[in-house]
Image: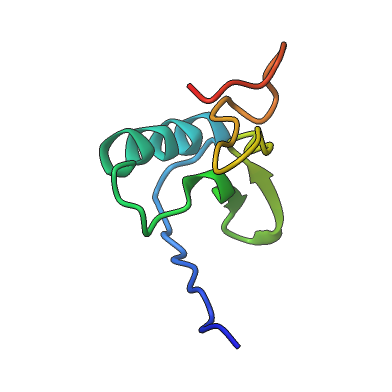
Length: 81
């Protein structure tokens, strides 16, 4: 049996989904080199509605270890970058 993975819940003082998404993008841009963080699984939720989550990235499998790095609601085909 493998060890459980841990989720970090990072509350913010942001008041809109667009602002929270921009922060998630900035975090991925600055910390994306860390293999211990799975940014593809990033979700956002309102403080009092944490059961309703919004995916940030598509993260669709593209063969092998590659996954789509575009926004979840992107138009056109998936791409690695």
